[in-house]
Image (cartoon, rainbow, N blue to C red):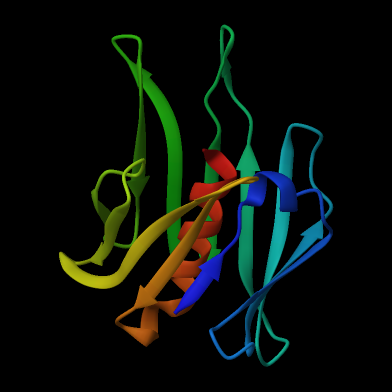
Amino acid sequence: MVKILNMRVSTKLKVIKITDENGEEIITFKKSIALPTRSRYSIINANNENIGTIEKMRYNFGLVDLPQIDISVNNNEIRIKRDMKEFKEFYEIMGSDFSIVGNLFGPHFIINKNEKAVASVTIEKEEIGRSYLADIIDKSNEEQVICILFALSWIM
């Protein structure tokens, strides 16, 4: 199990470490220099190797903030964005055949790759917001799943 804490508070930090249930470090997000309209983190694996970047771009539609997050990790390009249609907000995930099944605001959802479950995610509501508790079924996609959860907590 991996727990992703609420990033609305944590993204002000320059370094965010993600660990497993045994306290072993899986991924570190290190803030890096970006344009003023963007925020960027380098993604560092447990072997201290840079395996990609995650970047949030701002886009405002009137008074509504519709950010987009681009993830580039282990040769996978994933985009998560919040958009509006008929004055209703929705979230979209594109690239590398990842998809989300279930309600992002509900107590539970599944992350799929090629329509096969790779992670089961439970949302825990805490004083500071939401945290994600992920049971990663397919360890070959562990880093991508953690980056998707980081992006979801950053965008919501």
